[in-house]
Length: 396
Ligand SMILES: Cc1cc2nc3c(=O)[nH]c(=O)nc-3n(C[C@H](O)[C@H](O)[C@H](O)COP(=O)(O)OP(=O)(O)OC[C@H]3O[C@@H](n4cnc5c(N)ncnc54)[C@H](O)[C@@H]3O)c2cc1C
Image (cartoon, rainbow, N blue to C red; front, top):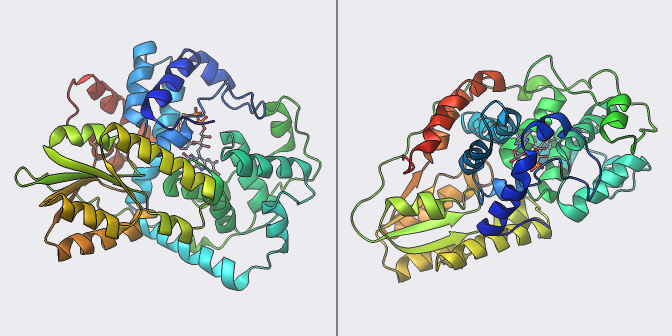
């Protein structure tokens, strides 16, 4: 259902682009139901892995349209960069989410309602339809995600962290930043005083009357502990210069497969490998379909680059030793599952005297520092990043 390599993802984008202007602006909020989603791109599982990175999508959109015509689509694509930049500067929000999740899963939560909903057996027909779609396809429309999260938190009064975790397990595009922060936004934790309350009329309208909620939806926000309200942004770490001497290897990973292009161009790489940290995926209980999709994308990218597929840090170390590497370079992974993997990798390389250097793409370097407050402040920095897309060689 979703492309697993760059060529197919690009073709999918090219086919969507004629609808990415005024049509997207006026219809993107409609969820016409499974199989009828031509009004949105459905590219998020590929964008999540940066099989198609944000800057390439924007560049292609601007080749089709004037900036004013494609601005809604470009804004949505940039929401992803915004969420990532925001979390990157507040790693404690991810850590707190994990702690609260663990506590809800083990101590405090009576799970009967939770199990009924997540098994698609809640008796609320439209929620069960959405749950089935999520588990069977790994995708939900953006508006439906908002309704689902709102009903979960404000109407059913279930802990938001359990809902975020349920999405993380099943969405093919599951992303620690976009998912956790969107749930926090719906809950009212992102912008204090503002939450998202789903309304029956709005659901009827934007599903073209296909869904008519048969339960009373909350009209007041659920009361939440405000302990997880946003901390002050931390300073972003700067990438170190890339090595220029010695034997260099490129390590790809599920946070940025586009490094096979932009990072490879910068160094004389002797060898390429890729890692999907499947045991960490298991710890976070990501579903088999998420693991399989990402594994397929990574394997296809590696096949195009004659690279070695790894699923453990030990296998990466074997590759680095077998190819006699002095340095390994990789795209800087974002806060999330990689917050646990990266230190292990660094320690393993240190023991073998192999230098690990991580690098952010210039798009992130340029835009992340603007993700300190709300999206509307961040948005002002987008035009300047877009003008640089015309530079023939990507600046690092
Ligand atoms: C509760 C909740 C949880 C979410 N969890 C995730 C998640 O784990 N991963 C994820 O990628 N998105 C998440 N989103 C954002 C959004 O719902 C999806 O990115 C979008 O539905 C993907 O569908 P599409 O590719 O057809 O989007 P399109 O409308 O075609 O948009 C194009 C691209 O822009 C990006 N995008 C669009 N809207 C958003 C947004 N609001 N936030 C961030 N990026 C956006 C996506 O990469 C998307 O592929 C979540 C939203 C909510 C409300």
